[in-house]
Image (cartoon, rainbow, N blue to C red; front, side):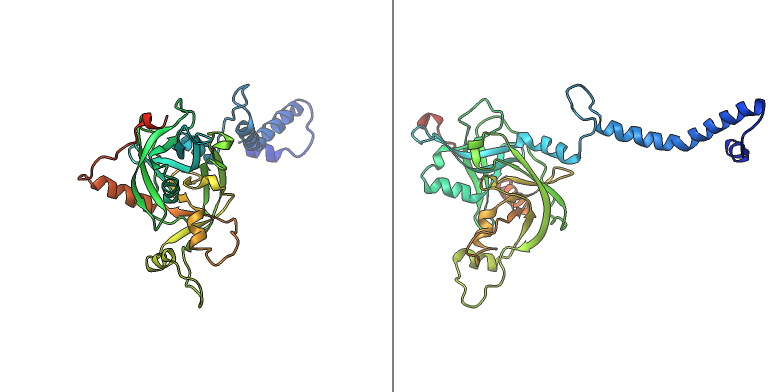
Length: 307
């Protein structure tokens, strides 16, 4: 009815019809403009603060993912009262499994051993009341893929959700949450966003005359992939979780040190490209630890020896 009425109005009307024309024009305008008005209002609501605090009504998925992981990402280092400074930071890690385990890089543990500081191993939670961190110990290590599993004294932490063992698609949006440059910038996890640039082999066939090392030989005999990333990754991000930007599921663990010894071993200078080790190797360590019921409980360092 409205359509027929509007389409039959061709021009100015006389007498009482003039009033009818005005109503018709207004009615037509409402029919035409209502969808547009709803779109404009919806867009305004998406960008309008919900309160005077400035908090947006609509939060993008990446922001939600970062918030959900914030309490799970820890600093890995050591505490010893005679060290200067007493807290030494070595990398990042994140809570897995039942909340009592931490995943990090194996080279972080190796650095502690090299400095005779493994008994002083600590994990540092953001916003923790314990400034000296929680005493920790090594449960499992995978030197080939540079992954380690730790346990720690203290209440369980919020575990991340580990993605299934499947490679991400090239171009997939991902994020990293960790402690770039270490504790010198404070125990505040920083987020970085990018994409998976490529899924690449850890080691390519060596050209004639290339120097073979034990680590290269093992990687060639046991091939595996790395995730090449298009994002900024800093030294302190070693051990940080690589997560899906939309779901917060962890798909890998940041590791540039390993890539420098395998993927980029023929280069004289580091490229600055970020890499991550697939989450499958974390799954494997957790499964091995969980099934090893006959193993002795991990021995924690005694806090009184180094405080």
